[in-house]
Length: 264
Image (cartoon, rainbow, N blue to C red; front, top):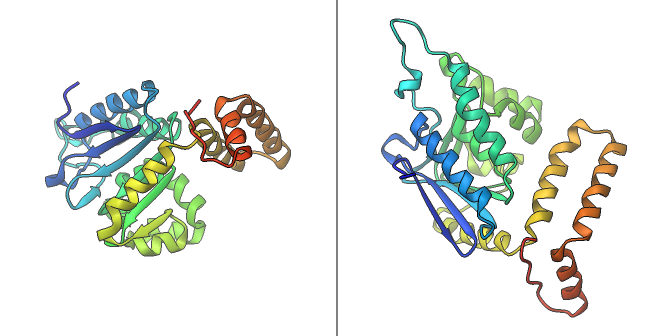
């Protein structure tokens, strides 16, 4: 597939996927979703890829759904079925990110609004510039936070703050988002590129399966009793304990050297 709405590059185990509609603040369209599905298929199938970095071109990360996209247009005076747009595009995107075989980093370089904010929160780690911000703008047009927003927000910041963000649609500066625990880290704009590259390199040389199993275990925890979670931990530990990366990690520890993980 030829990409017109995204950029996709792979180097040294790091896949960098850039939303590339800067004149529209990288807002989503049906065409962009099709390209994202193709790129994420490539990440899933390429065993040389060890981490995914998702970012935006220009001054925004993503402004959410492009309301001028044909998918959102009225037909013969009838309003579009937005639920179909969510089911066809956003639900698969979030589930794909949450189940990807490699860890994911959202590099939020500017405004992340609506679905754009939720897509960032679907990644394992969110790193943002100090000038970036997060906005749940749905209530201003008579909608609810979608793309997982009603799931991510209460889990990350608690019900009171989640409700305030959703109902009031106030912009949340990245620095406060980090203080609240919504994102992993906020860094100065001038240091952002180096911070993203450093984090990507760190994850690309880590034991990939262990990182992904950690994600899966943490996501499963809210629906489990303690006993169920302990059993899940045991099953994952059994699997990982037989992995080449575990053997390498133990050998490196005993030999007092840096490990060389392969992601296996």
